[in-house]
Length: 96
Image (cartoon, rainbow, N blue to C red):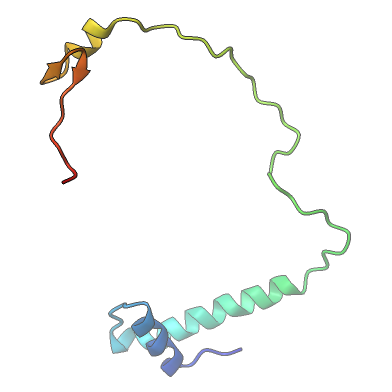
């Protein structure tokens, strides 16, 4: 598949991109280069290759215990609030 100047103009219009006329031909060349590279990738023999879900499959990451280490200090937390009421932050209404 080859991309010509008219195809580049149409793609730019559909993507709502302002593409100057001087960039149309170089863009067509770039896109044709990308498609050629994809065709080259399609030539690779992948028979018998298992699909990967991760580049580091089987790696175990260290886990820590899920416990609260700092809390139960509402006075300290609310001390930074510009406005509070009944132990809660007061914020401006954003939905009408």
